[in-house]
Image 1 (cartoon, rainbow, N blue to C red):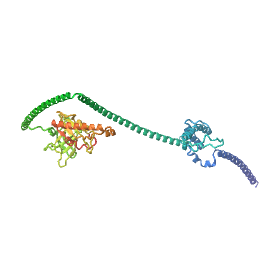
Image 2: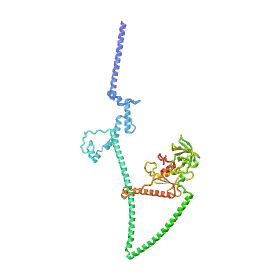
Image 3: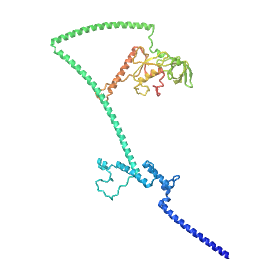
Image 4: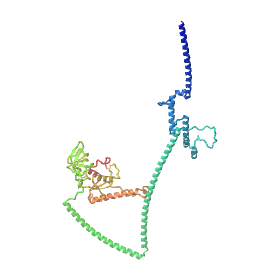
Length: 494
C-alpha cells in the first residue's frame, strides 16, 4: 500500500509538472500567434487573405504572393518610365512615376479640351466643366478628378484618327481639284491653239480680200477708155487661148480614140492567143500535203519541215485533194503546227468536217507563208477582229503583226511589188464639227481629220490595187486562206 501511495503521488507530481510546462508553452505559443496574427493583419486583412488569389492572380514561380504583386508593380512602372526599375520602396516608385505622368496628363488634357481655343472659335463648343479663369479662386474648392490614363489615350487616339481621316479626305479633295484644274488648263490651251489657228486663217483671208480690193481699186481708178481697152485685150487673148485649147483638145481626143481602138484590138488579139493572167493564181497554189492522219488523237503530219522554214504555231487550211482550193478559200479543215522535224511537221486539227474528214494527200495552204518568197501585204480599213460588233481601234496593227510573225512583209502603199491587199470596212467620216462642237470637245476636229485621212488612204489603196491588178481580200476571206478563222475568238489570237 505504501509503495502504491508513493507511486501514485510521484505520478501526480510528474503529471502536475508536465501540465505546468505545457501550460507555459501554450501561453508562449498563444502570445506568439497573437503577435504573428497582428503582423499578418498589418500586412493583409483577413478578407483580403481569403480573396488573395482574386487580388493577385496566379502566383509566379519562385515568388510569394507579395513578391508576385511587387513584380507586377515593377512591370507597370517599367512600362510607364521605360527604364530599369530601381530597388526602392513602392512609395518612391509611385512618386517618381507620377512626376513623369503628371506633365503628360496636363499636356494631353490641354490637347483634348482646349477650352480657350474652342471658345475663341465657337463659344458653344467650350467645355462646360472648364474652370473660368476670371472667377475667384477658392483655396478650399475641390479640384477636378484626374483623367484616367487609358481614357486619355483612347481620347487621343480618337482625335488622331479623326484628324488623319480629315487630312486624307482633304488630300483626296485636293488631288481631285488639281486634276480638274489640269484638265481645265489643258482644255483651255487646246481651245486657245484652235482659236489661234482660226484667227490666223481669218487673217490670211482678210489679207487676201485687202489685196483683191487694192487691185480692184487700181482698176477702178483707171479711166474708162483704158479700162475698156484693157478688158478688150484680155478678152481677145482669152478667146485666142480658148480656140487653141479647143483645137488641142479635139486633136487629143482623136488621138485617144485611135489609141483606144488599137489597144482594144491588141488586147483582143492577145486574149485570143493567151488569156489574161489571174491575179489570184498564187493564192490557189498549195504549200504542201497531208502525209499521215491520226484521227483518234486529232493529229496529222504534213510534208513541210525545218528545211522549208516552217514556224511552230503556223496555221494551214486543208483542202480536198481532188477539188483543189475554191475561189472563196473555204477549207474543209484547219490545222496548227505543233512540232517540226527536218522534212515533216506534226500539227493538231483545229476544225474538221465529220462528213468530209482529212485524208492523206489533201492540200494545205497559207496565204501569208511561202517557203521561197516573202509575200508583201498592204492593210487598210476598219476591222472587228473578235466579231463582237465593235471596231478594234488597233485592228490594222494587229493584222500586220500577224503577217510579219508568219514571214510576210508590210508596205504602206500599193506598188508593183505588192502581192496582196487586205481591206476591212470603209472608215466612216462624220460631218465636220461646228465651232460650238469644237468648243465643247477640243478633240472633235482632230478625230474628224484622222477619219478623213483614214478614208482617203482606204480609197487610194483600193484604186491602186484595182489599177495594178493586185488581189484584194476582205477579212473573212483572209482568215479562210490562212487557216486562222477558228482562232480569232481565243485569248491572245492577235
